[in-house]
Image 1: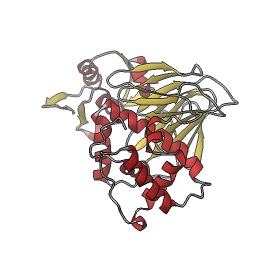
Image 2: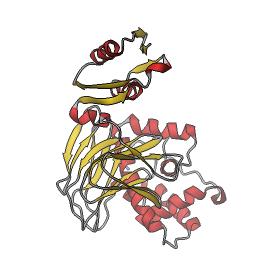
Image 3: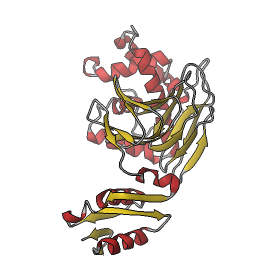
Image 4: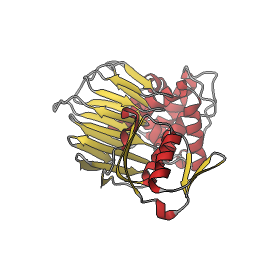
Length: 328
């Protein structure tokens, strides 16, 4: 395969997707993904096929012991001269056996990389890297992709659904089509709509879906909820069930509008967003300041300018200590 796996293996990627990797392994996978655009592309494609293959695995009668042995043989054949496949006792590798079954269902490790088989549409992957991107999907739906995010989708939507995969954050304006639902795979979370506008944000610990118009179904495995406008769904990594909350501000929209809209927004919430957007280290030293409500709009302003307004509005000090900014 045309990629540099380095210290990475397909088995470890499967373990990561199954959320069975320990902290060190998680860090290893994340470091590998972010090391190059090629690695990121491979992971996005791998994740997309993984999600699709799980549907077929439920009814499969494949012998997983034999499947794992065949998987090892195929990797050795497809990647002759690359990393050695280490034999390990099958009884201690339940998750690897699951991985093997799914890989065999798809054909081979080569299929995992290309995601192109007989009758399979060409796949397109876009990566925003250090800038916000706007892309139009084959059905006319418009996606605004935040920085450091990626999206994978087919060149044409065939079949009974419009399936895409997201890593990071994006705002969707989906073209209505009740006969062909729009389904987003975000790691182990599914977002299903037929035509609406909403924002999806995924981090290592949580996935958040904020709805602007229409109805959005958010599910994790077999447990889901319906989310209406002015509501959001929060799915935590260590929780099985999505939780519905009221969406209390519009700060999630900053990367589309270049505005920080505060309408009675508590100071701690604005600080959290500023830290994320500007890669800053702002801390509120005085606990009594955290819930002070702020009502204003900052349009395409610098961090110093925003903090200056905050300081004057609440009559608080803004001090710098190295890279840390202290509000007190």
